[in-house]
Every structure is written in structure tokens, then in C-alpha cells.
Length: 163
Image 1 (spheres, rainbow, N blue to C red):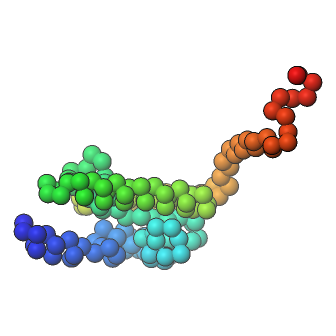
Image 2: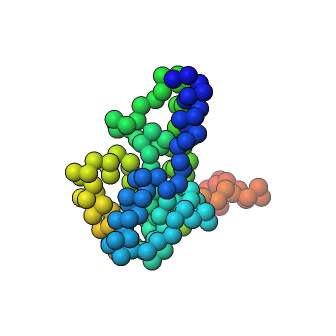
Image 3: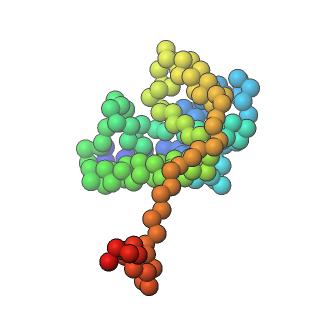
């Protein structure tokens, strides 16, 4: 492809209301779930937010989010360093958003584009997604917190009586 053709192709890629997103949203709606779409108040602006279940769903494209081991993820042969950096930054941002959401008490589910692409396995994947969403969610997550306070400047570093 010429640079102009490549630019036109990349500019045409949508970030919202993609075909995989629409498939998942239609399925969840048909099963009676109600949700919000692309909530910008939450980290990462999740594709689907189910407040009742305290769950967010991201539908990730295999190329843009670096799906390892997937046949749909292949780096372009031109400008390789740019694409490696771009995809690595996307993956790091996804991880940070997942951690932020989980610390806020949200259950985070990621669905890959390649999982719902083949019609033969789509129903099973979507049924599993529905089960994961409606399963009981333990909102109380306890993280062990060990904080060592350094001694103040006026305090001795050795315990009293052991001099």
C-alpha cells in the first residue's frame, strides 16, 4: 500500500460501535441486561458498563490491543518500531485501567474480537460472558497492606537496651 492508502485505511477504523461491540451488546440486551455504553467517567471508558452487576466489559481488537498468539495480530512490515511502541503503550494503558477499575470495586471482563468472530463458537462465548456477568460478585476485596514507616530522624535505629 502507498502511504496515502494506508493513511486512508487507518483513518477509517472506528473506535466506538464496532461490529464486535454491536454483536455483544445485542446479545446482552436480548438476555435482558441493561447497560451504559462508553462511560467516560470510568478509567478506560469501558465499552459496556453494567452498574447493577458492578461489571465493565471491554471488547478489544486483536491488532490494536496486542492479542498474543492470535492469528489476527500481526505487526505491519513497515514502520515496525512505531507499531511496537504504539501497541505496547495500548497494552500498558489497558493494564493500568484494569487495575484502577478493580481497585474501585469493578469486575473487569475483556472480550477479544477473535473470540466472537467465528459464528460456530460465538453463542458459547456470549453465553459464558452472560454467566460471568450475572455471577455473584464479591465486592469486598481485601488487599494485604504492609506499610513500613521509616524511623524519624530523632529516633534511634536500634531498640532501647540493645546498645
